[in-house]
Image 1: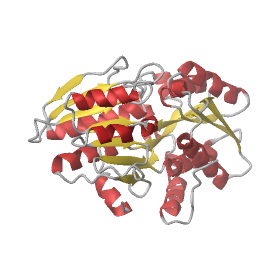
Image 2: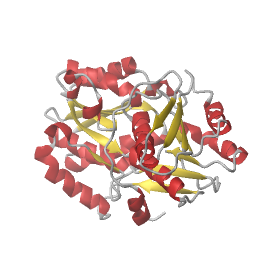
Image 3: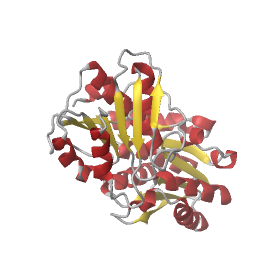
Length: 347
C-alpha cells in the first residue's frame, strides 16, 4: 500500500484510558453513533493483556474509539502464562461470531495463517506481523516503522543527556524489538557519536515473559543507571513500569513506548521521570482497520505500514520536557521523511 493510502487510513484520535482486565477479557457494550449495532469486534491480546498501559492498551483504545463511532461490542481475551493458547483465543472468538478479529502482537504470526484459512468468512488483522506471504483475502497486517520513531527518541536522549551515557531496555530479543534498538542507537549517534549507548534485553528470543516482568525490567534498567546512564528508553511492554521505577530511584529519566506513558501511569513520581514516549499509533491503525471493515473498504492480503510521514510513529510532548529541543527533533524528522536519513532496522 502506498504511503498516501496509509496516511488516509491513519487518522488522528486521542488515546483513551483503559481499565485492567488481565485475567481473561470481557464484553463491553457501547452506544456508538454509527448504524451498525451488529458489529462484534474480537481482540486477542499480546503477553501482558489489557492494562499494560502501553501496547495492548493502545490497541483496545482504537477498538473502543471505533465502537464509539459505529456501535457494537468487543470481546477481548488474554493469553495464558506461557502464551501457548494463542490459536485457541482466535478460534474461540471466531466460533463465538466475532468479526472482525484483531490479533495484537507478532507472536500470532506463526499461527494466524492456519486460523484465517479455517474461517474464510471472518475478517482478521494482525499487528506487527507481515501477511503478504500468507496472501489470505480475509487478513491484513498492520505494521509500523518503529525504527523511525525510535530514531527520534535517540535524538531526544542525546540532546538531553548530561552524562553522555544512555540506555535501551528491550523486552524480548526479537527482530521487531531490535528495530527499536537500531533506531534509538542511530538517533543518538546522529547527534553525538561520542555518547555511550548500552542496550540489553530482559529475556531471550522465545521467552515472552520479558514483556510482562516489571521487577526484571527494573533490575536491568537500574544496572544502566548505576553505570552512569541518565536516560533509559524501553521497548518492553508491561516491564517498562520497572524502567520508570529505576529512573525515579536514580534521579534519572526514561522514555516510554507505544502509548503516551506520561498520560497512562498513575504515579506522579513515575510521571515526573518520563521525558517523552515513542508513540506507536496502534490505536489509529486498529480504528482505521475497523472503519474499513464497517464501510466495506477492507482489502486483505496486504500490509499497511504506518511511518513518520503518515504520523503512525512519533514522539509525545506531554509534560513539556522536550519543548526546548523540539525544533531539532523536527529537523531530523523531516530529513527521515525526505529520505535524507535512512534509519537502520537492525543493530
